[in-house]
Length: 302
Image (tube, rainbow, N blue to C red; front, side, top):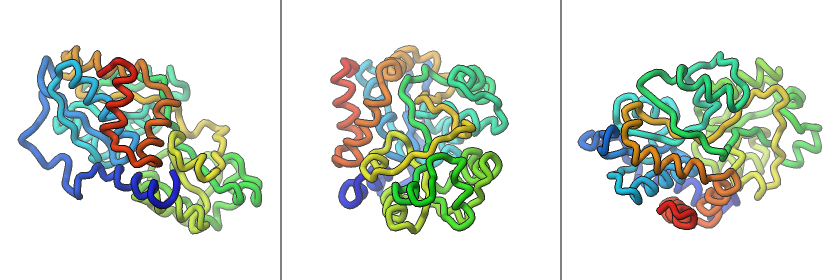
């Protein structure tokens, strides 16, 4: 993600173009995911989640499924409730973080262990569809200058600077197991301050201006290579594998046309392609709907 026009575009895309409206406010359109009913696809409030939601929605629509999208719902705490109260039918998720949300003490560390643990963790009212090979890890980064000046290449090195440094990330990170609590417990790195960011563009600017010294990103974000950030190794595997996985209401399993359409996306999408799709939105200012539609057509899925 490049500062300026592209960063502004990323921030705008993360808002979903909703003009500040509540994506869950229309109570007249509750989903009926079972059988052949309408499927309501939700997304979290960041670009990649919106792109994935559009991929699912357009793939299902191409197979004749009645689809509605409700984008930029918010953090995991908000959209899980939206699934549970039937406001949405399905939403793109990430395997490791999803498991930790439901079971913060889960011992699973590998992709297979996480997938085996997820069904019991999420409970009978929810289900996971087919996981993708595509991954998007949370990652801690520092500028190249900070890395070279302080000898920081891994999370284990952060204790060298944490007591005098500010950590930046999305507001929900503050209480996550892989956030400040995990950094302190696992790596002995207690930061002077955590600064929450709703705008990725502002976070990038503050990191480049040394107003924060460490920040979290997603590994598929263009901001990392565009700014030559150093991604920090995680020798203790604090951050679990994060395969893309659709999280759905359990009753959606009977809508085989919808499930098959989503699973076809999951089987085809790669990490490299997901990174390229993100870059089209973040750096090239393309609309997530257009980006999703182009990819689906190129794969014969729409």
